Length: 343
Image (cartoon, rainbow, N blue to C red):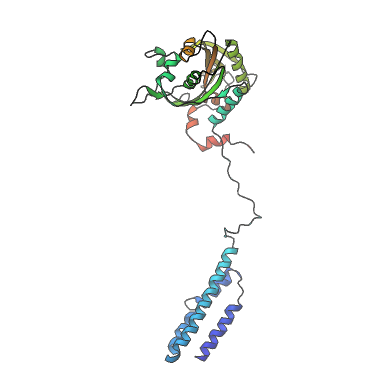
């Protein structure tokens, strides 16, 4: 037994003198002392050779040695993990940082913000309103009484439980709500999403985005409307863009017109977007109908105004050279990445 105790003491001194030095040395230590054929296991097999009255004393010494060997291993292993290349708690600050991918704004948002910014330079403020609207604000107040044939111009999504409520077909409902407040003069643009029961194609969708404008004051004329829209188009597409007005009909404006510009995709040569005409309609406009002013409590003998409205998707198609409106709602990352700002 005395010889075994001297062996254990020698092993103890060896363990305490070991200096941790890498993963290979750690594994060699484990095999030597704690492996299935290691020193600790072999010492435990010697218990059968110890006299019965000495087994308890020997067992205490052997257990202390085993705990020392295991503690040394765990301490060494912990140090190797903390200082190793896979350690996440102590990153190498000399390495270059990972570059986070840049997000991007949706092209519709870019176009919306651009349009708003142009009109804000002319003194227009932004107004917003509900997407679920009642019949009065969406139709009747806009000179579209019940059974008016012009209602067929917009195929509407009605709320089944209450047919007096619907998904708005234009953002003109915001104009009505703002006029009802009676705060004049009024100069606003009204952006938002609208809904119409239309067949989805490269040129149309069942939901899309609009931005409408309204200016009401004393002595507002059609010339004011034209100059406002000339400024907008040239700021949006450049001074070389060609513009034309065509007479049109809208129940809420009189006189009414539609505004075309030469196709920015084919430069007027003819393509599927412009239906091979070389021109693309970008908005409708006109002088606010006196009946609409009266419906909102505004005296049409004192005040006049103009209004205009455009879809945001179509100007975006022209601005960015996109030939299919469906791309805006498909959430294709390859498409959206093209609008990531350069750095």
